[in-house]
Amino acid sequence: MEHNDKPCKECEKCLEILQIITDEEASLDEKELFFEHLKTCTHCAECYNNEKNFKECIQKRLERRKVPQELKVVIAKIVSDV
Image: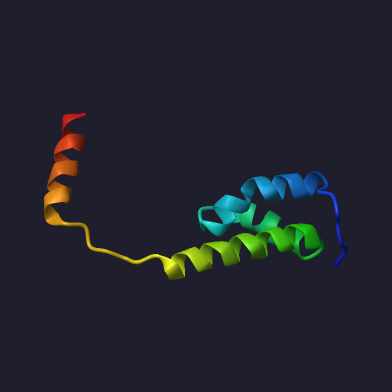
């Protein structure tokens, strides 16, 4: 794997789709392009790993809470009025 200090044209495309890759919203073509590029580019691989680790850290620290029924009713009313 070569080390790229500066992003190349492929890096620019990969970094554009990094967010949708880590959000698991990328198309199959985008995933293939991205992960194929990671095999040869440490720059993008590092960016991907940093983003993935950051999201995992945030998700572990978030506390899941149940939304109160009263709030659901208020939100539903506001949405239906729009």
